[in-house]
Image (cartoon, rainbow, N blue to C red):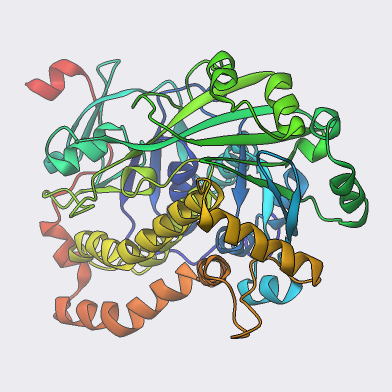
Length: 481
């Protein structure tokens, strides 16, 4: 472990958690809960490599501040690249629209950094940190059934595990979300599609306009490219220490409901068919030069009324609770926030009654925050894929004027001296501190509830009525006898 702080004081009452899903949300939760002394078994259906995708991701300051606090700053900085500028261009012409900097003042306010890395980079760091804290992580452990009332999880092998609390981190299509919802979900197309691809860095600049090349010579700090066009957009940024570029192509169009990260990267022909006839030659070159392309569905999912199963022993987090469009800025960071809040709450566990209370406290703390993050991500995709027309023309003209004046292009107009709507959303989301919010909840509400639940008697006598078992491994015959 490295960085600011590698551990946290242990909870007075320690319980056992089973986490279903070994992506960023599941691994972060495993780390957060073991840091405060709880026993964690994480179950991941894939092997230790297949669930760590090659695709790139943004790790925003609200996420990095948490991981820095957990002692992972050195590991993250070694694996990722710190990014400062956003370069905006027109999708169809390649014309430069302007630049926006993550300025030093913003980063000081957020106490984090904007990092660029791959999904696999982050999963590896979280895995190693969670294991070092004592988490048991089992791969090739496919969950086929869950009995939330009993805290029981059945694997494809027939093995049955039991725990006090089950955390569902198995994504928007996972079993845990369906159990909490109580039925099959009604999933609708969003009218947006995404293609994820990677290619060598030299490919990214081969057909770049001279104006952009000159700007790149001046601008340092691993820029993120944002191309905005007629119902289409693209973002790109360096990964693997700058040797490769991760690129995401967005389209406003009808797409099938299927398509995910674990699909074979065979969608390049479909991407090429969807490219418009008129587009930036550099974007065209990047799409044709991509080595692997995956289409990922961007669907509309139902908003869950509750994230806690009626049994009070199963909670969904991450994409299983609040699906956010993939390849947005906040997908990874919001999942890390979820984990951090869980760790903060269960750090205070002293009596059995709190175990269920904290699940509902988590929901109360996270629902509005995650809804705001979702709105911000959808707003940004909408912003960069605005169709041709007066709205797009006004946006582009406004950005060009600010760029010529030497201003950040997402700043507000000089008439009001403020910031643009997009930038206000970004600053607000980046500046959020989920651990502070959890601490505030404990001071304002949690302590009062704990005192109300405790009658001052010896807690060991209260533990006698706590029937949730420690983790048990049974054979199929034993479990049904």
